[in-house]
Length: 148
Image (cartoon, rainbow, N blue to C red; front, side, top):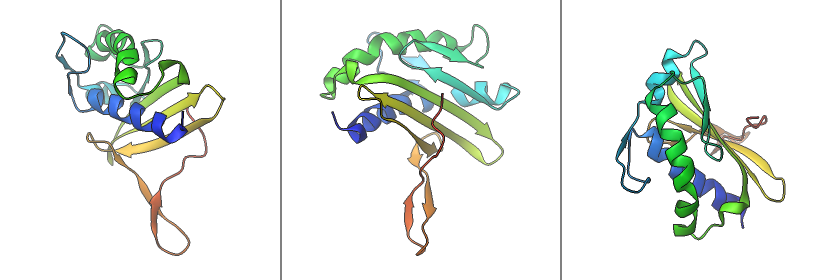
């Protein structure tokens, strides 16, 4: 499977949680305020592992801690609907960041061949962050240090 396709699936899935209202889990409508929980953390971020259903830095007994196991269980079906094999993912981590500059999240995935990359998205809608290259052209921002 192409690595970029895996990132696309991971972004669509993450966007469902980041947007605050999710319908990806069958028979559940999930409301989450993931960036509010990130802001409540002293570090200003939380890290969600969509493959294990665990979250670091979220409020105890909060919305995100409740939602992540449900998202974990629904992810294989989501992959199937998007013509991706669930087993292609060996890591799927998301750092939700609440800062004075606005909300953002960084998605880190690793595929079964061991390629690990991170991409940053800004705002609740998850627009890909950009930077200017040496010639002043807008390019997607590349992160050097993948999330561990």
